[in-house]
Structures are given as structure tokens and as C-alpha cells.
Image (tube, rainbow, N blue to C red; front, top):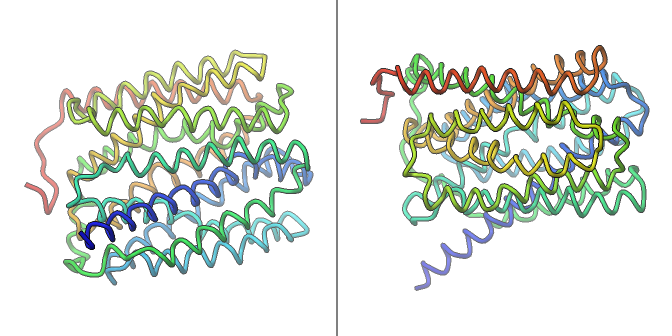
Length: 392
């Protein structure tokens, strides 16, 4: 009974940490662009600022994921990362000119980018023998993001965009307190062999899957990076922008619960193709609207796009990546859908936005979603039976 209570307590702490970390992510995604706009930077400069995160994330996700697997610890790595976030966030908000801000934000993303994939690893390792689902933990991230986007949007409407630094430092501090209370899920287990990881990377099936993930994720990251600016262009207030993000985050919750109970009935690649079709519909609608209030309704399609995409892609990875490579596998996935896709969307999207406007960005996003959909369906119909190392 005591062991059961300890497990339950740790699971609750893990949910709270996920909630807190995604509150910070909500600020970074929703209000950082508005804060930089408030500070007087151009759309292209903001796009470049957002591009540095994914660029840094390519190396830092792989580095910290490898170190986690090599030294069999997630908790200690996350403590280092969150302390780094807290310190570098202070530099970001005190930087006085663009070049210095660029360097400081790069340092911030060096510590911020890997936490998501490491938290996913911590969750999956913690629940492997408990019968719990990944979705039942990840849903708390959606709740945290929604609380951040909606609640903080109201605060910023009343007190101004300049309050953003205080809110960001507060949520990072909460995450730091919680991570010290977590039990490390990687205190024992098989040591990672570098050769095994290289064998997985040489798998044509794995690399092709990541390629399709990148294509779909570029369209998703266009929306992440430029939704706030697009809504501002349409005349939206900070609070309305926050409500739009809150709507998308809350819409994930029922889908996560539904997939945790019934998702196993459907094959992964057709589900990902379905998400791609809805992505295309969502972004084509976004490119044609003129009233910013309509964005809130369109953002509800986030449930059938990112909600399906995230859970299904992680389920696919859990089947093909052995436990001893868990953090590295999640890091590679994060590099694909977050870092590489974010780098492409940040630089390309910023250029397109300045040259042709926000509606064009969304039309291109819809076209990319169609390409990914065709790829997932084609792979499902014609894929071979290639096996990845460590799986039978």
C-alpha cells in the first residue's frame, strides 16, 4: 500500500510538473512574439528570433537526450536545464539591442528546448508498468498551456505586455521547485550503446517517417510562430489572442482522453493522414478570414490536428524505440517536429509574412499539410516490414 501511495504521489508530481512547464511554453509561444513586437522589433526580426530556438534545439535536444541515456538520469538533467532557463530568461528580458537579444534567446532555448522531450521520456518510463497512458499525463500540459494563454492574456490586457517577464520567471520557478521533488525514472536499466542508436538512425523507415513529420510540422509551426502576429494584423487584442490559444489547448483534452482509451483500435499512419487533412482544412480557412474573433473557432480544429498528431506519433515511436534509447529517440523526434520544422518555419515564414502577408503563410501551410497526408497514406499502403533494432 505504501509503495502504491508513493507511485501515485510521484505521478501527481509529474502531472504538476507537466502543467507548470507547459505554462511557461504557453508564454513563450503565445506572448513572446507580442512582447518582442511591443519592444519594437520587425516581423522578420521576430521570425529570426523564433528560428534560433529550433536551430539551437537540433544540437541541444540530441546532446541532453544522449547524456540522459548515457548516465541513466532524467531528473538531474532537467534540474540543470530549468536552472539554466531561469538565469538566461533574466538576460533575455534585460537585453537592450537585437544582436544581444539574439544571443540571450539562443542561450534560453539551449536550456528550454530539450525539457519537453525529456519530460515525455520521464512519463513513458514512469508509466511502463503502471497501466497508465501517456495521454493522461500529457493532458495536463494542455491544461497548463490553456491556463497560461487565457489567464495570462487577461492579466496582460489589464497590466500591459510589459508584465510578460514577471509571468515567465514565475512559471519557470514553479517548475524548478517541482523537478526537485520528482523521483528519477532512470536510476537503473540498460546502458545505451551508441552503435544501437546509429543503427536506428540508419533505418530508412525511421528516417522517412521523420521526414513526413517535418513536412507536417512546418505547417503547424507556421501557426505557432505567426498566429499572434496575424491576429494582431486583423485587429485582435492581447486577451483575444490569449483566448485563441486557450481554445486550442483546451480542445486537445477530450481528444487525448479519447485516444488513450480507443486510439489502439486505429493504425498510426492512417491517423496521421487524417490529422494532415484536417490541418489543410484548418489553415486554408485561416488564410481566408478577416474577423479575428473567428480564429477562436478555427483553433478548435487543433484537437483533430495536433491532438491526433502528437499522441499517434508518440505511440508509433514507443513501438519502434527500445527503452535504453528512450531519451535519445524522443530527442530525435523533438528535433524533427520542433527544431528542424521550427527553423524552416521561422525563417521561411518570416520572409513570406513580410513579403506577402499572413494569409499567404497559411495557404502555404495548408499545401504542406496535403503533401504530408499523401506521404502518410502512401507509406501505409506501400511500406515494407523493415524492423528497427531492439524490437521484434
